[in-house]
Length: 115
Length: 114
Picture 1 (cartoon, one colour):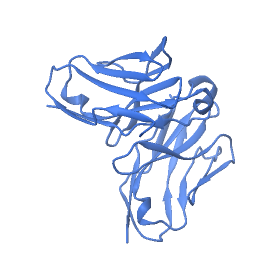
Picture 2: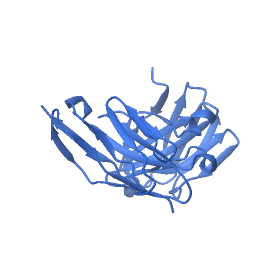
Picture 3: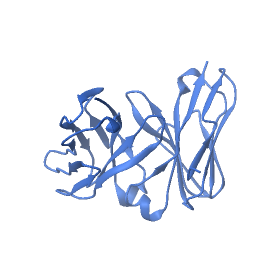
Picture 4: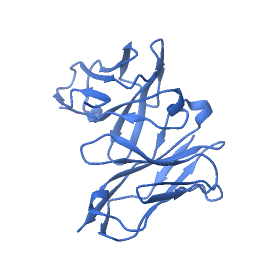
């Protein structure tokens, strides 16, 4: 089983719908991140969390919200999806040591299409 | 702000050819530099890293040297294989004040033909 698991892996939805992407990890890491990948733009940070009580906005947080339900779980929500949120979304984790060396551990991605 | 710029892809090479993927960065202070690789259908994984000027990161036959004077971290491999086909991302972080937040380049797709 993957250390960082994202669900769903693929989702097609309509404009205005609420969508939740979930991430769970078995690595025991404190830090969790949500990134968005768009062709030609690389990965951009949406939100990150250093522990259950610490949540921070990233570069492109508008239109998104997150919930850190437990150390191992970090969910990303789109309250009212719009077509330009069509992208590949990645969850990543790190602990203090690996985070301070820049090594993140990524899930396999959730591909979201908003029609 | 801090940023990373990579050469545009896709890059198509024949097996055993020499690979260079250019990466330059802009940062205040002294970043750590990384190459991540994304194989088809998978998440990103760390390929190599360098944390200070003149360091050389290496892994799986790939190398990159941290050049402070040219603000570059170009990825090289002497002889590519079909299995190296993937998207490669250059990234940076300011370790002690960004807590692991990475800034990524736009990615360079590599396709290696038999």
